Every structure is written in structure tokens, then in C-alpha cells.
Image 1 (cartoon, rainbow, N blue to C red):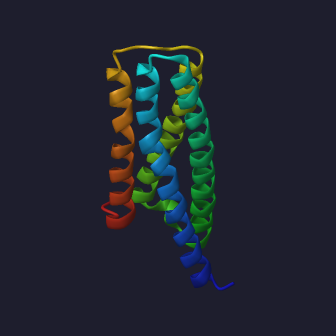
Image 2: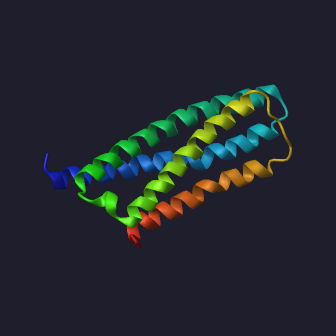
Length: 144
């Protein structure tokens, strides 16, 4: 496969799986809020199943996003030396940490965490917006 073709296919799949990953990152914390506020065990069990399934789907999206991103790094010589890319890379590390924190919340909620004060979860729910905006600006505009 030619390098130009490999670049275009890798970029295409990188974006497709990034959208899959972010869809999960946007919705899963909202499920945490509903789960934490649930009044009955049947609802909590249902939310736990939904959270686990969504986490699996978004993890697949994350892994494939990273794989196709690594292919892009291979194809685009010297990209790792560009400041915008280094900043994007740091944000991706943070995004992976956020992803793992979602796994922590799945376990915490499953273990019985219940609260009517979901302010912390509501703030947690907004974090992926920062990552998405920052990463897209860096990747498209390459301001540095």
C-alpha cells in the first residue's frame, strides 16, 4: 500500500474511532449521574449493565483510535517533534486517565455508592468537552 493511501485510510479510521470513543466519554458520565440518583435496585442494576456495555464499546474505540494514531505517527515523519503534536499527546494521556477514571466510577457505583448530591459527577461529565475542543484545535489548526 502506498504511503499516501495508508495515510488517508489511517486518518479516516482514526477519526471514526475517535468519534466512537468520545460518544462513550460524553454519555457514560451522564449514566453515572442517573445511576447515583437511582432509588431502586432494579434501576441501579440496569444502569450498571448499560455502563459496562458502553465502557466496552468506548474502550474498543479508544484502542483503535490509538492504533490508527500510531500508524499516522509512523507515516508522518517528524510529527513527534512538533509542539502542537506534543501538546495533543499530553492531552491524550489525560484522556486515557479520564477513561480509566470512568472504569473506577463504574466499580464505585456497582459497589453501592448512592448520593443525591451529584455535583462532582456533573462536573466530571463536562471534562471530555475540554479534551475534545483542545485536541481538535491542536490537530486542525496546529497553532504551535
